[in-house]
Image (cartoon, rainbow, N blue to C red):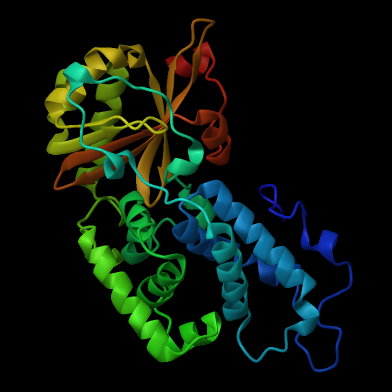
Length: 354
């Protein structure tokens, strides 16, 4: 059952409790399979709350372990799903206690002109919104656009501006469409308190430029159209050929390039091109492997390896709108991210030449 190490160090519910669930008379029998069926949606929820793929998976594992340990007290008065969300919310609120806000480079500073661009020291991993594979949190590639929009990097970053309980209220009410009474019961508060928290959360979120998940501009969250697939194919070919003229032609005039864990980022085709032709020239000869992250197209980028083949360099999450690429988010923490996305640790010469 375990996909990552758990926050409590337990690997499976059986490790926490070997007694079959629901043995008490009149109580529902719940199996490990029934708990496991909720993993992906709980992962999406915890990811929105925490902004970290790895913390979200730890939170979900801790949720399932706690649920298994407590099944003898589950009387079935609420749905299993609601009960699991209550546990997951408490786990996330505990994890968020005293933690700092995760962000994107664009939230921390102004864009850097290429002429004065210096990477500087990397910030700790806890500073950044991390990408999450679609396969870990979305049930189906064709899942509704609203769900995909609600895990976009920009939306998850905007959520981090909210106090943790406001964050939970907004996700449950606006994203998951829970009734105010259901949220009040989950949080152990009143409907009036939930409505007040939602109003404050909406105001804070609007100040970031997003009012709710469904109001954001199209960034490739729905199923890709033929035009969008063509755009991504041209991007892949231009990047692998390191044809900067062709690549620049695909960028929106306000396109951004960011490279966590570095705070530096830049805006506009001219500065992006200058960076790629200068400091970023080591990316020439790269190979890209398509994947999906945050409801968006993504690529595992491999740079040429002096020892032969290609080695991991970045996980690129691509944002686009109106037929142009609006964001290249190059996450450089490949030691952690490539295994999470199931990407190979090295491309041999034969694979790189295909």
